[in-house]
Length: 131
Image (tube, rainbow, N blue to C red; front, top):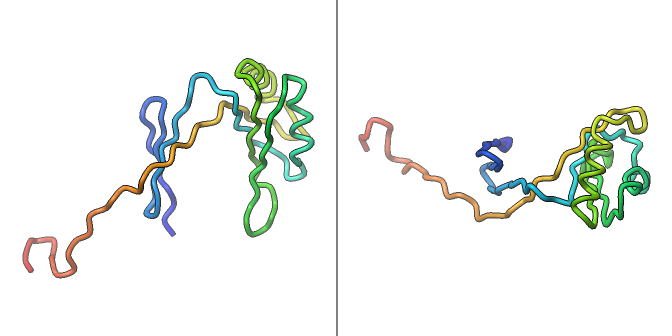
């Protein structure tokens, strides 16, 4: 299976693979944080508790591996306000949480797009133009 590739355009990142394509855009004002460096033992309750001191947390999602069920080491924390998210980002980025330093940044917004069409060569056509 082919891994998706990332292309960065200024403040936007485009990811593509043979099966789909979507656009990831970063917003300068955002209330959703991307949190990386999570210990495998972190659960959504403990992550919410760690970020709740900065404001009202509306949602916490930790991403898990489909096969093993173990945490993939990152997740998302949503705040009800952009100011609270910004305060949490500034305070928690680099801070140790359950023995591991966190990497906290504003999450990229995923915009779903139709898959790009690819050109397929006719099976009878060769690269030198002959048939």
